[in-house]
Amino acid sequence: MILKLAWRNIWRNRRRSLITMASVFFAAFFCVLMMAFQSGAWERMIDNTLRTQTGHIQIHAKGYWDDKIIDNFMFMDSATISKLENINNIENVSPRVETFAMSAFGTIAKGIAVLGVSPGKEAQKSNLPSRIVKGAYLSENDDGILIGEGLSRYLKANTGDTIALIGQGYHGSSAAQLFVVRGVLKMMTNEMDNGLAYITVSSAQQFIDMPDGYSGILISIRDNNLLDETIEVVSDQLSAVSDEDSENRKPETENYAVYSWHFTMERLLQTSQSDKAFSILLMYILYLIVGFGILGTIIMMTNERKREFCVMISLGMQRLRLSAVISAELLIMSLMGVALAFAVTLPAVHWYAAHPVRFTDESMIEMFVSYGMEPVLPMSVEPSIFTGQIITVLAIVLLAVIYPVNHILKLKV
Image (tube, rainbow, N blue to C red):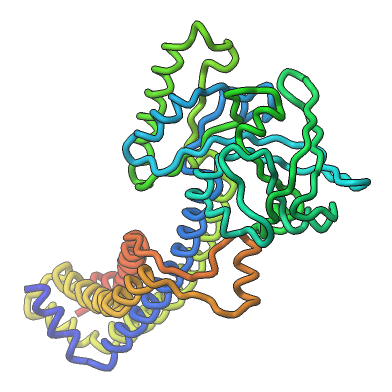
């Protein structure tokens, strides 16, 4: 009965009802599009970073994350790495040897980061071969080196030249070795382009004098929703290996630490959350403006229908029931506005989630690449984007009905 009366009352003044619905519609429409674009961009950037650079899961020796020195590297044999690759949901297992060295060619020297990788696995993980602008990619047992364009210009070294790396090895030993430049890369950022070089894992282990030694193992997974379960399986596998080989392994390297990307990428995650919080603030400001518009409509409607309320109360309608009818009117109008906004935005959001907007302007592409992002603008279909609009509208309705309900309860017939 209450809903029937509320529905009839809505269409008694169509103009007022349509204005209320339209204000809610446009607020929900713009908020959904804004949140979908922003969440989609962050999700794509984080996913690209995890799959191409850091991995969803990282394995290190205990103590390495707090003090990233060579003496805190871990030992792991190829059999253990193969077992990790066979775990369900794991897409790529990429062993890494990360260290620093002084690179020199002729009379020019520069400190750089040296990254030892498995060429085959790195090609699958980060598509590194596509970044080569001169020369060729590394083979699996290559003793050459890949350097960035900026480093190549600084050292004045080209493909075929031999550069020297001088650094520190395991347990304080000196590390020095010559590497032939196999190729020159165009890195994603200027920092990487000017100060990063790639060599094979075997060459890196030989350079620091640490066979079977790794700074870490980066693992990419297929389904991020199964992250916790995959970490548990990886931890169990490593615990079994440590128990089996504890007699042969050195005490400081027999224990592994397994980290999820929420820990290793904490700074990026905090940045994305801060950016989303700012967008939510803008959304609330927009809804606040809409809320004042709805409140103005409610005040006008209440004053216009004062005589009607008096007549209905005189005929025996309870004040609480009348208040419920007025509340239902506002709720139905607001939800109809949200529903119409969802009907318009849902198809667009799903379409652009599957077919992201791709930038063709060179300046825009360079800007995105400089930030390590793919030059596309996708949308997210995260359910919280839509549920957030409903919750906000319900909160506005609860606040707006205070005036007519209070007016009805205190009305003198």
